[in-house]
Structure formats: C-alpha cells, structure tokens
Amino acid sequence: MTSIRETATAAFIEAYGDEPTGLWAAPGRVNLIGEHTDYNDGFVLPFALPQRTVAAVGPAPDGRWSVCSTLAPDPVTFGVTEPGEVTGWGAYVAGVVWALRDAGFEVPPVRIALASDVPLGSGLSSSAALESSVLTALIDLGGLDVPLERRPAIAQRAENVYVGAPTGILDQSASIRCRKDRALFLDCRTYRIEQIPFDLAAAGLAILVINSNAPHQHVDGEYGERRKSCEAAAAALGVPALRDVSTAGLDDALRRLDDDVLRRRARHIITENQRVLDTVSLLRSGRVREIGPLLTASHASMRDDFEITVAQVDVAVQSALEAGAYGARMTGGGFGGCVLALIDADRAEATAAAVAGAYEERGFTAPTSWVAVAGPGATAL
Image: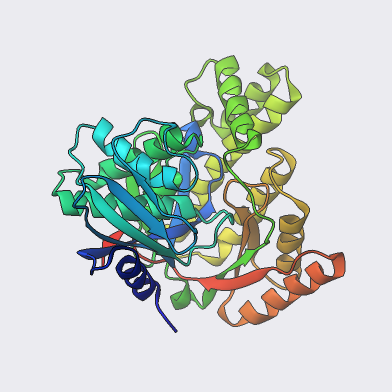
C-alpha cells in the first residue's frame, strides 16, 4: 500500500518534473475535551492523530508559489496576495504565505504537492494539518526564525483573516505542538502548555474515533454565531472572556444574563473549562478510566446547551455507551463530524459494530471507525 509520503513525492514529480527538496508532515487532531473553549480564552486538551497531511516542497524558479493536491483537480498558483484574492482550498496555502509575510518574514517562493489521509469535513482539523505542514516547510526552507510557540498563532491568523473561518487556536496548536503518547493541555489565553501523559495502551484502554459521516463546515453561520453569543455573554457579565467565570460563580452569572440562549451558551463554556481541568487532574494521577463521565457530560452540554450536535453523533455516543464505553462525546466544532469513545482496548470491534448497527436501523450513512493513538506534531520527514 502506497504511503502518504510516497503519494506526495509522486504528485510533486508528476506536477513539476523533478524531485522535491524535502517532505514535511503535520497531523490532524482529536480534541479529547474542551470544545469551543479556545476562543473563550479557556482550556483545551487535544492530541495529534497518526493521520497526516504531507507537503512535498521544492523551490520555485519563477518566484511564485504553486500548489497542487491529490484531493483537488486543479493546481493553484499565486504571487504576493492579500486576503480574499485566493479562494477555495488554495486559500489555506496562500493564507500561510500571507500570514508569514504579514508577520515580517521573507517567505521563499516554492512549489508544493499535498497528500493527506486526514478525513475531510470530519472535525479532525484537516485544514490545520494542511496549514501546519506548509508553515513548517516554509520556515525550514527559508531558514526563518519563528519560535515553535509562535507558529500556531501565525497559522490561525491565516485561517481567521485570509480564509475567513473564525476558529480558535486549538487546531493549529495541536497540529504543531503535540507529542507522541501525550495530550496537549493548552491555556488559550497565555498559550502555556503542559504535555499530559496519555499512553492508553499501557492502561489497557483505547480511544475509538467514529466518523459520523455527517460532515460539517466551519465557514458557515453556525460556528460564528456561537462565538458571537459567547462574546455577548462575556460582555454582559463584564468579563474579558467566559474563561473568567468559574463554576463557583456559575449560578450568579446565569442569573445576571437575561437571555436564555446566552445563559445556555455561557453554561457550556464555563462547565466545559472545569471539565478540562478535572480531566487533566485525573490523567496526571493515572486515573484514566475515571475521565469517562467527564467526556459524556461534555457531550450532553454540547447537545443541550451549545446545540451543536446532530442525530448521527448523538446516536454514536449513546450506542458506544450502551456497548460498554467508559465515556463518549462528539469532538470538533460540531454540526457533524466525529465522536470519540473511551473503551477497553479489546472492545474496539464490538463498539464499532454496535454503532454501525444503530446507524443501519435509522437509515443513516454508515459510519467509519478506527482506534486513535496520540502521535507527534508537525515535523520534517
């Protein structure tokens, strides 16, 4: 079976007629817990997937940037651009070039061929994997002095400003800064990180990822509306962000909000931040199975208070729990995408079958499932 790195190399040779200078890879991610907390200056706990986007890259003799992808029919070529001038999937690459230049760096013109096995539109952050692989390649090839801790914000700016997707810093941080057998505990206000032990195999456990095959799209009204609601709730409470409200102050905060939608949105963020902190505490002490109820509570909060789940993910969560999962939740921005379930390592096949059976009963498109192992962040290959 051809590997992603072999596919990217072959695509480069076919498109440009010579060998690439090198290969760079960045992973998709699963967010263990902490959904929509990132743009509220809160806490998140993602880990990197083995699935990656690989960029085969070499210099461009014509002084322009060119990119092709095995997942798109036509290549994209551009010079120095401003936001809005390149659209479609090429905007993610043009956005990275623009964000680096906007930050004051001289970006080398290159030719790029992309290949990826990160599922698209599934809430596993294929866009951040693309941005992070290209960003890492440009930094290395250009000899740019961009500290690791600064790179996620540059990639995020590419997506926020150039592409126009109002995402937080979670995805790019995970794709760039995660480590093998670790979950990345990130404070989205200070950017402080801690690598939390997350070697599930050693505990006889596994994370089963279930793609609901009900795709979502961040560049739509729903994600942006949730962000606006959170900002409105924070403003009404007189705090910089909902991160500044603790669970001890939750009841008082909810009484001060006179809009029921804002109350529910705020309650999700405030309680979700606490669930992240509680999960980290349990993982630090090796009590991995005990995070299960926190995962399930997170899903209920996303379903009832943040209203970002759909029938397929709700059925996947319930079916996984009925099959014996310790906890399960939707992961990603919502409105489709993937579910993760914490299970005994020998229960992956049975759990996946239970979810597939529930889907078949309801006439849903069949889900796809796999066991996710925490992998490394962006790197040269």
